[in-house]
Length: 216
Image (tube, rainbow, N blue to C red; front, top):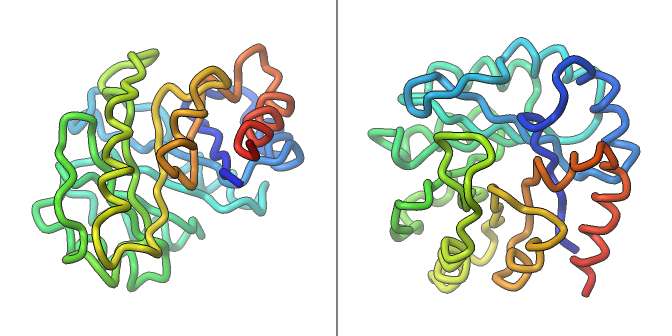
């Protein structure tokens, strides 16, 4: 069954603590955090202190997506907080294997994220550090950006690469009840959803319906 990771960047920030508790009760599998530097992408929303404050509120795994140039400096802080998954951008790391190694050596699951325009390279060279791949299906520059279904071909292509059978494939960007089936068709393991989960503030029902679609 597909796992759902609500993206807190789309959540109402004035009630995050209660919201996180409700998401856990509603069947969310992970909590997804985007951390931006205002440089790699122009936005800045959530910060390390928010993740730290929320860590004691939920038992769900914390999945942190670093949209940051040269992100190695912040990874030890996230490990100290107690997050479980950290992904860094292929485009933002001069030496991706070294960065993934730092994440792995701190006991976290290490992920490599790809913007829509970036072709998927051979990933075997990033083993044994690489645990998951995050494919963005929207451009990260602006909110409410267009969903790009053709990008999902990267999941299909990546799954065909030899020696990567254990990799987890995560997709993020514009997923709702109307299009989550696209992600399932290509074999995504985790679907990050902001708008789709928080639509009409009915996230318990939205998560339930997404998982029901994932059973089909």
